Amino acid sequence: MKLLTALMLPLLVIALAPVDAAADPPLRDEYRITTLFPGGDVLRPGPKSEDGHFYLGFDLGLTYSTFQDGPVSFYSPNPYFEQFPLESTVHDGSGVGYYIGLTADIPINETFGIVGKLNYHARNGSFDRTTDSIPVVTPQGEVLAAWRDEVDWAFNYVGVDLLLRVQLVEESLYLLLGPSLGFLTGNNANLTQTILTDGVFYQEEAFPQDPLVNQLTEANSDGEVEGFSSTRVDIKFGLGSWFHLSDNLYLVPEAMVAFPLTQFTDVQSYGPNEDLPDAALFDRQIPFIIENEDFNMLTFFFTVGLRWQLDM
Image 1 (tube, rainbow, N blue to C red):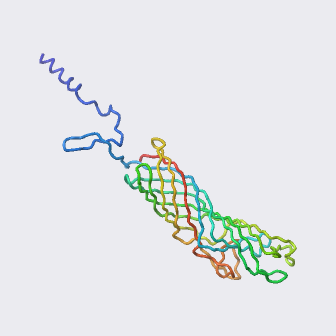
Image 2 (cartoon, one colour):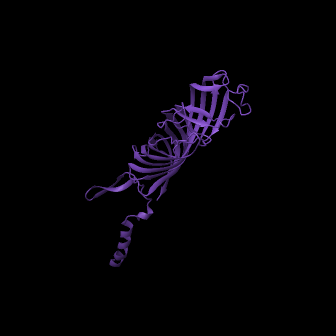
Image 3 (cartoon, helix red, strand yellow):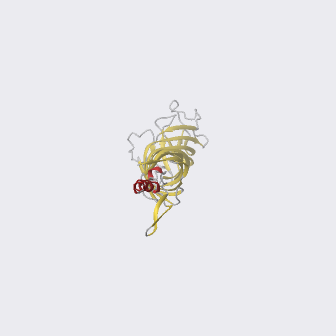
């Protein structure tokens, strides 16, 4: 009997022992063993840990830019007479562009995260301005002419953002704030200029002595204009939100506004005997034309993106 008891005792201990933890499904991150009081542990919900993962994704969207503090004037190629470029002026305008980009979001803790963005976007504007009382020489003498400038202008940028994310609501609303650096890759000004004064026409090279014969009152020009800063710095501020699509995938809409911190124009001076570029902003040596250093843009960004949660 003693021998049987000695053999059964280890089996009884094994049967009453807890099941091995490896056999149980792992506890979800939001449930952890926490101490309520000395000597007593209980299973209760706890905050999710932000350690050990980050988010990577892409964004698509639109920009809306408002150009302010004009006027600014530029010249562009004349389709009728190459030696005399078109002179045109823009003031206030606005327009819609596109946005594509990549985003990396690295959580610091439950409240804060660092967001980096690399993007390519367009900041566009449409302008409509009438210029009055400009002296023009005609075969009948000097007259005060007026014309209308309609300009569609596109500015393309490569942008790099470094933003602080402040999570206002867990897995929902958050705030973004930080600097943005933009590199201008090119611009294109599409100008339609119409003479509004009777008896004034564009002169063609084929008719240098009789500019009234052609009766051309509209000219079109399209191309890049020199005189803008190659880099710009903005401060960005905005809101975003997370929408959980699956275990590791989120839909992320964002709305931000970029306030300019640097000058938009960067005009060089050209002397009276210097060769001018095909198109450029005017400097102050040109009569009746001004270049405004305060001319700049305020841009809104509206994007929708996808974020994948990845383990570090």
